[in-house]
Image (cartoon, rainbow over all chains, first blue to last red; front, side, top):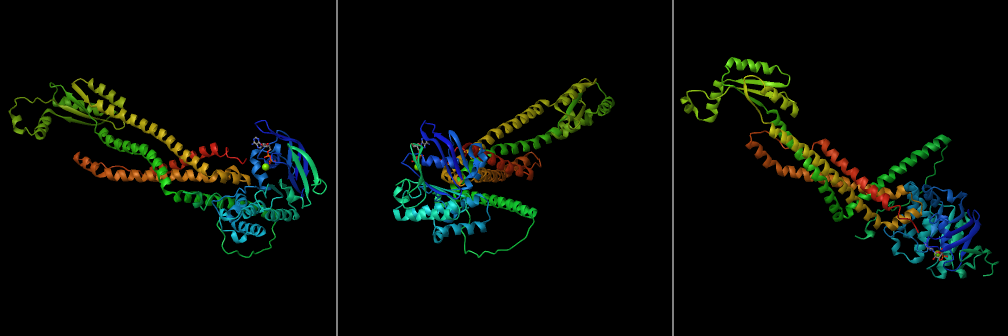
Length: 226
Length: 345
Ligand SMILES: Nc1ncnc2c1ncn2[C@@H]1O[C@H](COP(=O)(O)OP(=O)(O)O)[C@@H](O)[C@H]1O
Ligand SMILES: [Mg+2]
């Protein structure tokens, strides 16, 4: 699903955020991306999203070479990727329903179908009863679940998350991670950036560890001995 | 006004009411049918989105009536100035075209000429192509007319001699250009028996040039104020974009195309332009109503049946169309300049 081929990223200020990074995430695979703060986790996800572009090397998503992609195609790439942010990126000028509906409205879906899909997604994250509320009135954990519902509502084959449990207590964090596992079980490829090692050590998934922009370790949680 | 008071933002859908159970209708279609259905449903969804965005952007403007009216007012004034001047010119042209028709050349004949010779000369002049009506006024007729009009009446009977010359009044053929009229005058001046030829060309000429100047001024003013409208709308849209920056970022993150992001702002621009030109139309119509009475009195004083001309249907349509186009263009300029700069980070 994702292939990095000797990718380096140097920011305009000269900082090397990623150095000669190569890895693959198979279709339907779930993996964690860890490393100290500033290790380059967010940068890696931004390269997948075409928010940033590699200085060297090539990134492939769903078989497409991103460096060959025209700017006009970027929106269509992003429709294949559901993203969850630490700060949710919700819009507080509209209801929970309208927040989740946004990706479907962009695709020009019929209102009836939008309603069905949004309610299914909200049901999945347990917020169907709050669809008419403004997300500002929800708790942090609920807001994060609205963000997740929006990320999965158009059934993308790839789900990315950047510190999705950053502000949540351990209980809520486990619930959120469990949600991601459920999506993975129905075939969605999942890549989650987090520095919450205590949380992921209990989950048996592949773990990519970054340090100073380099890939330090790649293996299952048990094997790398966290 | 806080952003939370705008419940119908970019791409918002209606909050659903009671959910309906889904009907699954099994259908068999050929591949061609399916792709046709797909295309027509794409067109429908595109049209639906346009309708929705047009409505949303209008409601947004209505929900901030004060700010919207201020902008519309500026646009309306900028549109009314050249349009008002254009109306003034059209009316002035109407008035002067009446005068223009009565422009005439008076040929004062030499005293030595007899009436018969005068008549002959008049007939000769009438044959020219660049001449319309020709009228011969003999010395006697001239005196009679003068007596009647001047009110000196009998006093003039004491004159031994008729001091008035015979006159041939020549109307230039209609549609004659200024230079042609001047040429005609020179020709007539050259006829034997003509003492003096008079055409009040000086003021016709002045008026003609003033009109030309006026038309140029209107065009120039229209261009400058058109640019002003573009800038006003562009700046208003720029502020709207700035206030919806977060929304634009999120839309782009979940796969919104630039066209999708641009659309509500372009509609907003069109509404500003249309609203402004509509308001401008109202301003002009009201001013005309206000001027009607004094203009009527003035016309009556000159025994004229002149009527103030307002904007006809075609002018009104052009004004509205111009407003809409300027609005769209202003928004387009702002949007292409500012939206590409708003990218997720
Ligand atoms: N836009 C940017 N410009 C310059 N440097 C940046 C930018 N974004 C991130 N960095 C730097 O790149 C490094 C990696 O950042 P990031 O990918 O956000 O790390 P992480 O998400 O693992 O904490 C950090 O040192 C950060 O300061
Ligand atoms: Mg980060």
